[in-house]
Length: 627
Image (cartoon, rainbow, N blue to C red):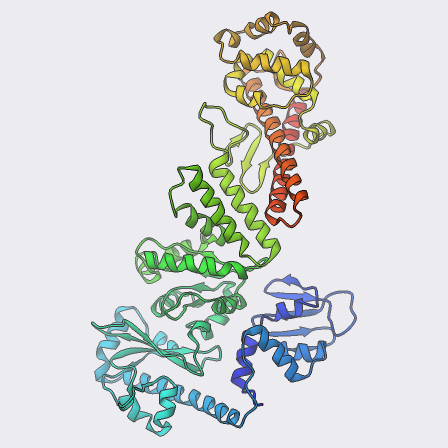
């Protein structure tokens, strides 16, 4: 059995070292690396580091150092070939068979590298000839500098069926065919694949040419012609410019994915050296794995046209099963119809930086795609949206990330549909994103309170929720300020009240809400008196001891009504969430394997706690008025 250096390099490239070591060692993220207590010697503080980008581990305590293969042989005691077979099975690679042809294949692979290096050098030489004047003019028009031309290795394939074939005749026709440089057609002589094209070498991570992309100059199809797949070149596992971008990405802390060769060149010209591009295909899982070795959150910056945005959408869906805590994608949206080169030409580096700096998270891109996919004007359409979002989240392999996506999609859905103003003008709780009278309600964070510290009384009321004391305060406030009923009758009607006397007063108030006389000074008290509630309403006013502004006779009327409305909304909000949480808990108890029910339980619990904090904060604010 013969394992070539090229095959072993590919095996290492396909292996994420932190994932391998993380199976048996608890790793902690430390910048662009991971650290842990060393598995090779006893220690109390971590000195063992794993670097996915470079593909090695190192312990600063005992000097243990190696790659994925060495880790399995030394840490787990596997024989070399057993370690290789285990890694190969995970990476989806076949271990070369033990046959006499292995040595021949190894020699041929080495020879193919020599062929590709010779071809790259020959193409570069041809670019300087008079025949390539139009190719040089094209590069000048695209703003490619002489330094860039050399750095990227631009060349030219002259027109003619046998020009390259003759120049590299010493390698033999079979090897030139295997390298993808000649086309072999049955019953015909092999001929040059690339003719009359600007040539761009595609290099491996070690900077060795392994394939070419050829751009036609003038009319003709295809616009770009890539090498076929060969023993050296697998386009689904390769990224253009990965050899130069890897170091730039480590320095910049990011990697930018664009659509084509010239987009990468344009980024490089603007000082953004961490640009890469797929090779005429949709971004594959293998390419994503390589991107994540360069940066935790690669930025996809595809063209602003329909094709570019569809490519971004496909990448978003394809990435979901692979994302992990701290490992995801972001999406930069270019102006409609523009590519990075267009934007740089019109607005310079600052314009592109502005687009990259505002790249949206993967979750936001998926949400936007699904919301825009179809009209949402019927319950069935909205249910379809919710189902599509749930299906996306279900594909995420990592449980923690999956639950976070489920919660995020539900919050977005609730913010868009369930918290909109009701048709009769009343609102149910806080509107997400709108400042309330005592803070701000923000999707994903709940209510953000002011900085006043909470008293024990405030915290107990926030935790207990709808207590008789709070209900008494609300009803007393309505007696003092009956005009509040106009905007909060529906919320008041939804308030769960266990005391039958208080509930009767509440019902009478709601019934009177649309009677103009009830909203006048003293009018509501008269209506309650006529309904036989005079004694109870008088007891409310005498016995309530909370310091709400709407309970004091000397309070500013506008302030008192605002505070009363805020307290009603907060109490109803908390009560509704408590009831929904109970229902979700019952569903989860009935089916403990229902992950969606569990995620719903977590979301509602967090929302309930946020609502309790809202109510406690409102109480604390009112307590402060009496100081």
